[in-house]
Image (cartoon, rainbow, N blue to C red; front, side, top):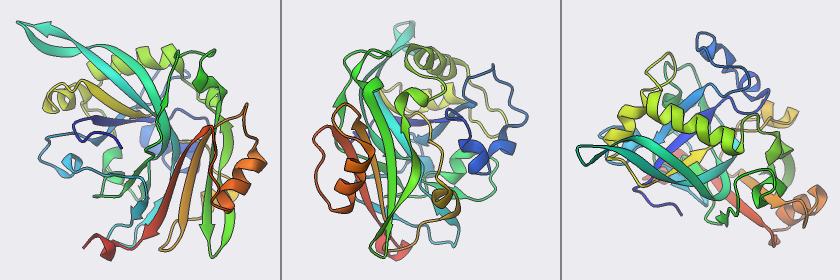
Length: 281
């Protein structure tokens, strides 16, 4: 599991069609970005923050629902663990100068489907609201020739003993912005993203987190299947997200392994049971 000193941020709008399926495209209508770049970064966990976002939300085995009746929808993603370095002013860290991804894992940016002024209001509602696999895989090189480029992302929901494909089985290479283009964009947003519309002032949050040496980035949710787009989770469901090496496994083998609780040798697997809000007590 990640360290609770690590800043966690998400990337909004980095997979074609997801925002539209999630009903969030209209949130960004006034946010101006260059073509084929994401909409922005949003906070998921800010260590030391005296706010709901300062509470650790990640779990590798449970998804605890909020106390309201709001619809809750998993968002299958790749998460990157990155080293951060900073410019200095008078010997003290200032703005992010470099970012180096060195590991990845399967993640679930589980979201509330409700109107909100800021993206983060749909995200961290307490412990066990986010999913993060403990199976981190080392990144050899962060480009189209590296290990990450060989991976695919699949997700499933098991309800009443029946397994359903939840997100489309997608290549990591299908992300709109990736590798060094993504790194440069994230550095720019860490240095310059203002409080604008649904987005937060990210440089301010980095300062409030006391310039952490590491950060985790959820780099964007894939598209849903028809079932996933129309189905919200409920107690006793099981949500499974699998980042798998397509050189070692195919989609049918992954689905079969998930359905029968068999391990996969070249994969990062996140498997969470959905529990009611009362389980938090």
